[in-house]
Amino acid sequence: MLEKSQENPVLKIGPSPAGQVLYFFGIRHTNNPADAQFSHLEQLWKEFLDITNNERIIFIEGAIHTITPSSYEDSIRQHGEAGASQWLAREADIVVICPEPNEEEQRKSLCTLFNPEVVAYTMIIQNLAGWFRHATQSSFDKAAVRSVKREIKFSEIYGFMPDDVWFRNQHVKLFGEQPLEDKNFLNSISDPRKDDTQINTVVSARTKMRNEFILSVIAETWKSGKSIFIVYGKGHLAALAQELRKLI
Image (cartoon, rainbow, N blue to C red; front, side):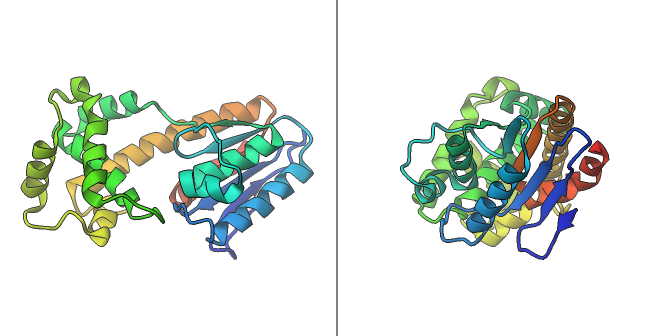
C-alpha cells in the first residue's frame, strides 16, 4: 500500500506469511527539526515496532554517524534525516545500514560512461545543492572548497587532481556566466528527472545505479527473514515502489 495523503509518501508491504513487514518513508532532505515530517517519521517508526516481532533492520540514505546528541532534535540538526533515523534505531537497539554502492565504484562506473571532468563536477554540484537544505550553514564558498577537496581522494579514478581553480574553470566551460551560488540553478541541474544538461544525465545515471543496488540489498535482506524500515528520498521511493511490491 502506498499512502499519498501525507506530504511524505509511505509504502507499506506485508505482513508476509512469515510475518515480515517493509515500511518505506519517502523523506525530504532537511535538518530542520521543526519540519512536520520528523513527527510523522516517529509515528511511523512506533507503528513499525508495534506490529513486528521478527528481526528488524533500518536502511538509511547518507553516511552512518556516531550518534552522540542528547535528543532526537539535536540529531536532526546535526545529521538531518540520517540523524533522525539513527537516533530512533539506537533507542530501539536496531542495526542501521546504508545500502549503497561504495563511492569509488560509483565514480569508476560513471567515468566509463562520461567525461571524468564532468563526473567530478557533477559530484561537487550535488553536494552544493544539498548545502541549501541545511537550516544552519557555513558560507557557500567554504562549502564549495570542502566539496572540491572531497573529490581529491578520487583523483586516480578521474585521472587528474580536482582543485578550486579547475572547478571554477569547469563551471565557466559548462555554464558560462551563470552564478554558481544559485539554489534554483543547482536544484535544476542536479535533478535526475530532467535531461536539460550533461549534469542531469550523469545524476540520472548515478541515481539508476544506486537504485539498482539498493533494490538488490533490500531483496536479499527480505529473503533473510527480516522486517525492513527504509528512510530514503521521495524520488527513490517512486522509482522502487513497483519492484518492491513484488517481494511478496
